[in-house]
Image (cartoon, rainbow, N blue to C red):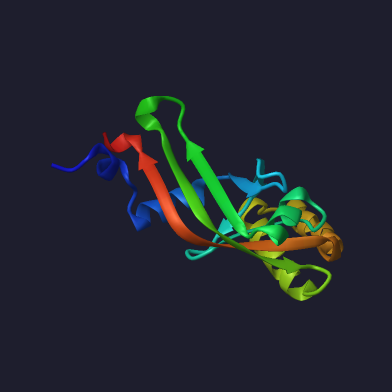
Length: 153
């Protein structure tokens, strides 16, 4: 007889479908004093890595430069019977817009295309390109997934 934990675990395909629908991820990095730093970001999951971008001077980038370990969380549901979520443990690679402008712009466009589909979206992406020298892309390479889908109960 399998455990409840095994029963509610998402398959790789279910994780992919869930991640495509999710709007944002909560990001946990480690502050200098060891306390957690949490924030929420838009992201893209390319099937292997999670990708988001932020200002290079942000606290999460400062933390990741010191310690590349990162935790991600995305979840959905409003009552116990429909709760779904994924926690991802991994390591972050930072690509600085000052050093790799074209690469950062390419990733910024990738993230932007997930969220913004109309003319305003194109304007938004063009505006973000102007900020690219001050931004960094973070590529999270997952080492462990923990998932749950209470609709399976």
